[in-house]
Amino acid sequence: MSETLIFAGIGCLGGLTKSLIGIAKAKTRGEKIRLGYLIRTLKFSIISGTVIGAIVGYSYPVSFVAGYIGSDVLEEVYYLFKKTKIWKKHFNL
Image 1 (spheres, rainbow, N blue to C red):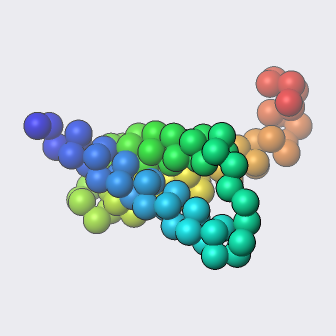
Image 2 (image 1 turned 30 degrees about the vertical axis):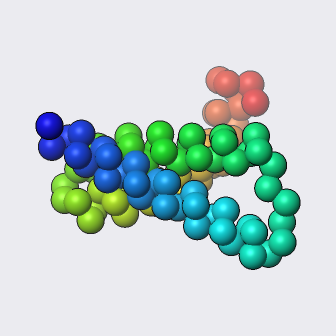
Image 3 (image 1 turned 60 degrees about the vertical axis):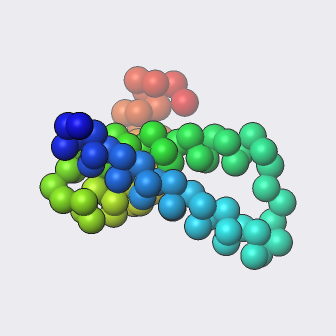
């Protein structure tokens, strides 16, 4: 198995861990979790963790952490671009 695939798998585990921790926090606060939101969150965390874990791929712990924080980084970049005039001009959001 290619080492890049191993790093991707470990990044995927990091993303999945982040998602499951978020779900556990929401449940302890007594929030109602909608099934559609749960599935979207899990898919996004797994995909982003896999991609970022494969890209970073320096070592196993680094890939895990990159997968864990990957969805946060992508989310912040999205909100940053969404607020800028250039993004609104080109993508009409």
